[in-house]
Length: 304
Length: 273
Image 1 (cartoon, chains in turn red, purple):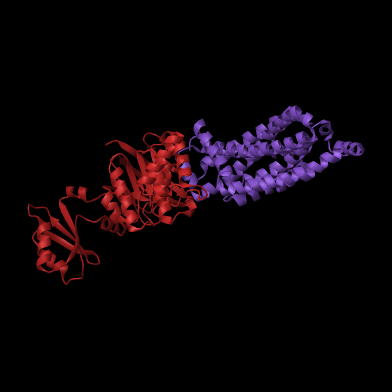
Image 2: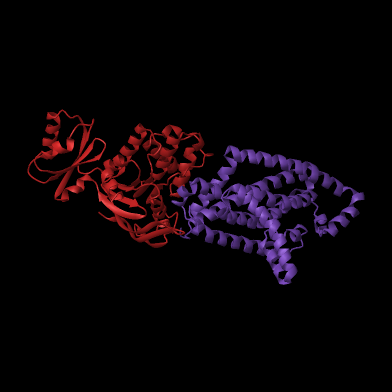
């Protein structure tokens, strides 16, 4: 897998406040990468640096061998910046065609490309509408469409599904998973379940400091293993009863009705045993996750 | 953020400004208002003045008035409509320019639209493209008013047809140089301001307070009179009467335009989008 983005000792300060503190990371071509963190953690600052909207206070960023904002990245890197809006006075197709032409498309190709990207987000029918006449969700999807013009190598989506109804949020997730074969997405969202579904590489920012996580598929390298069990109701003595299962080392309640079960690797299939145990005890479960949920990993780290 | 230049992208950015003026509802309303105002100017101040200048009894008085204002060369123009148009355009268009160019990049920047564009064009291209676009819009308006003036003149005196064309082309070329520094100044102010309204206010303050400050400084140190060359339109008084040197008529506006654009670019590349 080739490296798309490399950050070395990257810092950004606003006056006295240090928004990003000495970040070092690499993003490789492939599965979508998640950028998570609480409000004010520095996610949008990092997005802005990657897009070249702001310059770093120190350190370096290399995107496909070029500096952010460089003309060599046009057509290769695209983004949905948080809160950025299209001009409300123009038709959608006029604006998207304009962006296509800036990317080197001919007038005829621009019209075709505009309809293609609008079709991807299910909004082909609003091509002739003015941006100001669209609902919030539609505007968001149109701005996602502009990020897909010309099939760039890297697409950064900052809070792409925020404000979308569940159906359209799911459509965006489906779109990302369909396009990720040719495009590497960098996604920022507060919906950790969504990111967990899509991404294997997670960049976690907290107070400007970066840590990296792997989602469940990569957790198996550890000797200790975990399951996360979410029950539908509160049952008595769940932790104590789960400890009676063979191979279980430790159980704790991670949040309401949710239990993290730490067990020792063995030939025994604990997940099957666990589900049978639920059945025997008449416990209704909502889901069983192989490993820690991303939410729990992040919560643990932020409270460490 | 780099300073590379791609002429195709600049052309697209400039063309989009023309689209903004001529193909949006707001642009068309502004255009209609502009046409109505100029029709009134052509019908009354210019039309009446031409009638007066044509009267034999008024000629010596006109020569006195125009002579005292340094405009006597304009009386030699057989195309009297263009002489009056020239004076109206020199005052009207720069003022209109401050209003019309008050939103060159500022609203797009505040709305975030510039973030989409900056992923497809460098900041230098955006700046130059918008500058050329806005200047082109203004020159389109100049051309429209010149055609209207020409039509009125030929209607009065058909024999002035060929001379009128030459005069219109000459006026058009001079207007390019008159307006360029005003548009470039607005490019610079747009980088600093946070709204189009504020950019207009800053422009007005620049001329009003700026002149007072320079005069006060020049009163203390006479060499500082040279600061007057910072103000676009400084040469208008001279070129109105066709008394300006080539340097004043063409050199100064080019230098001013270049300086404003260089300064605007320097600030623009450092500015967060």
